[in-house]
Image: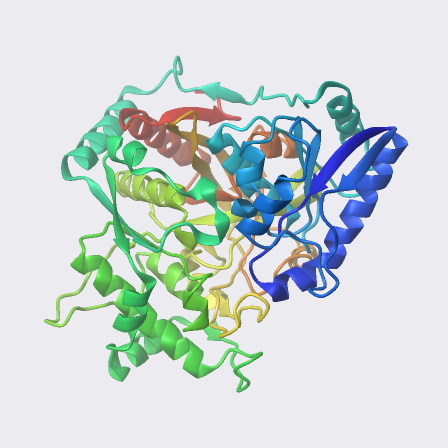
Length: 528
C-alpha cells in the first residue's frame, strides 16, 4: 500500500480549534476512506491531542517539529475544514520534496475553503509546487478523478482557459490614457499604506515585500496597534457620541443587549466609535492614503472589534472626523481600509479609489472572503462575506438597510459590532493583487451581485456567519472550479459600477493603471 502523510493547521485560538475539530475529524475520516479505496494508506503525521480537544497544528514551532518526522520525499496531503494559520505549516512545506496536495471541504458553515485559498496563495508566493482539490463529500467525479490523477502522477492539472494576459488586448485609447495618467500621478506623489502591525493570522500571502511594493510607488508606514489603543483613550466622549448619533440618524440598527460576554453593548459601540476617530487622526498625521488594522491578535484582548470601524472608513459617506484644530479629515472621501492588514487588498483599494473617482463612480470598496457557494436557478452563485471592511453603500438601502451584531465570542472575546447587510444587486469589478515569481500580479474580472429570494438568502446566511454581511455573486465567464483553481488568496476585492458598460470601462482603466505601475495584469473571464 502506498503511504501518504497528512497534516493540518489550525488557529492560534484554542476556542476556535475546539469548535472546528469535529468538522476536521469528519473530513479526515472521509479522505482516509477515499485513499484506502484507491490502495493508499493515509497516515496522520501527528496524533490527536486529547488534553486540548483537537488535532490541529497550533503553532509555527509545533509545525516545524512535526515536519522533521515526515520523510522528505513522501507524498503529502494538507487537509483543512477550518480557518487555519498558514505559517504553522509553511516552513515545513517549503522544504518538502515530495508531491503536495491541498484539500478542503466544500462547506459554508466550516470555512475550510477560506483556509485552503490562504494556504494556496501563500504557497504560490513562496514558489512551492502543489496541487489542490475541494469537494462537499468526495463522492463526485471531479474529486475522485482528481485524487486518482494526483496519486498516479503527483499533480492535478486544472484548466486555466479563462485567464488571458493584458498584453495584446485591445484597449480603448481614452481608458488606456486615463490609466497611465493616474499611474503617473501616483508614482509622482507616492502612496503610504499605514500598517497597524504586519502579518495577521499567518497570512503570508497578504504581505508584499518593500522591494516589490516600492517599485509601484507604494510605501509602508509601520504603525503599532498599541499606538491605536493609546490614541483611543484620548478621544473625548462628545466626539465618540457624535459618531454614534450620526449612525443612528442614518438608520443603522444596533442590536444591543447588556451581557458583555455574549451581546453587543452600547459600551462596545462607544469604544468602536473612539477607534474610528483615532484611526482617522493617526492616518492624517502620518499622511496615509490607506490603513490596515490587524486586530485579530493583540488588539482583540484590549478592545472591541475593528469591523464597524473598517466599514465606515471604506465609504465616502461616513461620520465626519476633525483634528484638534477643527479641520475635517479626508473630507468627502473614503479612507480605504484593508481588513486584516492584507496589503494586497490595500494596494488594490488605493488603485480602485483613484480610478473610480476619475470615472465619477462611487469609490467605496471592500475585500471579502471567498467563503462558499452553490447552484441556484441554473447558475453557480457565490456567497462572499467578510467580518469587517464592507461599506454600507454596498448593501440594499445603505445604512438604513444595515445592522450591527456582536461578533462571535469564539473569535472576538470583547465583542464589538459588525456592519452587516445584504449586497445590493449590480455590476461589479472583482480583483485580487498577489505576489508570484517575485513580482506583483493582479487577476481582474467582471461579476454581478444578484438578488435572491428572501428564503434563499436566509438559508444561505444560516450556512455561514450570520453576524457578517453577505453578497451573492455570479462571476462572468468563470465557473466554480476554474475560479477555485486559479485564485491566489482567501480574499477578493470588489467595487460597484452603475452598469456592465461602466464596469467594463472601469476594469479597463484599472488594468491600464496597474500595468503602468508595473503590475502584471491577468484578465479572468473577460475578453477586451
